[in-house]
Length: 297
Length: 305
Image (cartoon, rainbow over all chains, first blue to last red; front, side, top):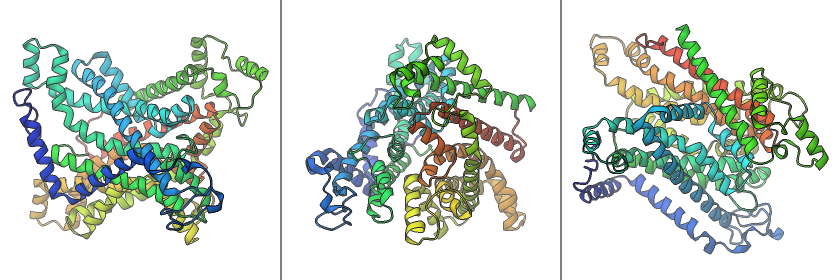
């Protein structure tokens, strides 16, 4: 059981979230790492949103007079790359790609996976059998290989990366939603709702979903980090966002050709990536410990 | 027991069959397949010829039946680039991947587990902090970036090790360490939490109270009980190492299955991709089967069947 009084279906719909909010705020004050991570993520999200305004349109046009300048020269805080483009500006645009991928893939995978998992867990039958087989296939198949194969077939680009990651990622949500639904289905309030003749849609939305949402939220934060790293790895391998659009992963792979002369090209975009993933993971751990101490991942 | 193994192998085959079916239909339904299989600069008349030769003019069901019939016999078609059987190209690279993955697994087991044990037995100490830091960082640092960083430090700056390729012992050090890093972090994390669980059990207190030495308590009682979850994890971990190898081999130009698959995808050489998919799935299924069988050794209460 969770220590939080989980939504007592309708009786005190407002009071419950408020205690939960207070509890989150209080535990945030006690956890400096989590607060720092949240602030950092907020800054990155802001930078991603504002990057079109902050970064001049000419960012991707080459300027051969200023090739491979080290950081902190001529007003380039992160230096310039092999074409003389400002690395910091390109990193800000890269933040936009990483954040878009992280957010959209998680939302879309959850929207597809959670309903399917709930239906499979509640009704069982052929849907459940099919889902569990898919889970097996997905487990036996390296995630990155699946993503690369889909991307190679569909064609390259940001939209296809997101589609790819959703195709590879929804199953995780379906699996967890199924498992949680299996447990909740047997609880008295669901049985009671069923006996009083509540429609299935109502049972799913009002009785099951509020009781399985906590693990789904926790998994989602961890999934954000996983998807951001997956996109970066795919872009690093050359299957992702195509040049000159900068993604952190492709910036690292382009910089690899200059590893002997320009260390900043490979270290800085990767550092941004690692810090975001670290901050997301720390936030996820904190959410898990606060919302649902019974989950151990 | 025999029935159980056969059952598991059968379900592994079903998984491989489903994976192949999925790739087959993705390739056929995403547009004109001949454009996917032919090299980029093929002329129009050659396209027709390839279409005829590869049977793309046949009905879909016939194509699927032919494809599966060939696949069962290990024939995934010819590599469009190298003009020889795709399975040959992939199998050639298998030893390099097994070598890299095997060494990475050995490193992560022999670093991760002791670190996790130290961290649990010296709860709250410096070891514990180091182990927890490694676990947190290991989750967040992308494998390809760690590889690039190690290359920058040990190959470029210090010039101790080669940047890429396969040859002597010095070539495998950087890729193996990179590949093992994430897995080491996961072993340390799991060993720590499992050992903390086990150390709190009543039978541990009993073992200590009856005067057994610390070593015996730790090895005979704690670690053997913790080994169950470590074995499960190793089955999964082999899958993750395969996944990591796909990326890491590319970083260090390590000529293994991951690299050949990525190159095949970049060259749109889908026969090689199919062969690699089957081999990856087969390796994964076998690894999990072995992990399940190892339960029986670690915990005689587990009945398979």
